[in-house]
Length: 107
Image 1: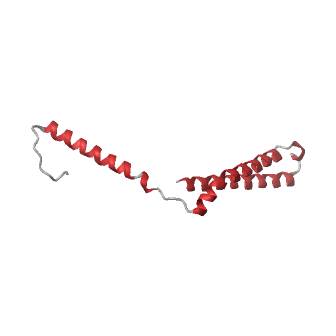
Image 2: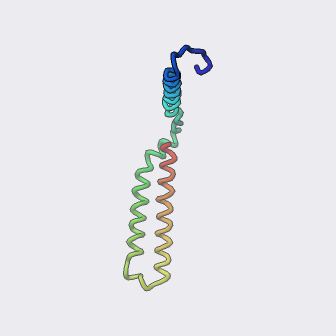
Image 3: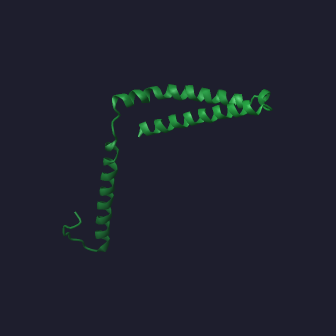
């Protein structure tokens, strides 16, 4: 305890004692931090378990959309190209949302 009087022969002993107390206090805080993790509810755990499959499906849709945009047959068709870019954006947003939700559930 910092308020308790103690006998020290010199300044070096006092500093060593102070440093060891600070390290012990820091170690106690670091050990306590991981135990504060919130447990997932049953529904959240089921969602997390199914998340990998959803991510894979959504990434496949994203890849299909990328291939659709890269198709040279529609390069001169502005309307079709615009529709495919909209589909690509929607697929990318879906993948980003799933990864964000996965990261949130993992915390």
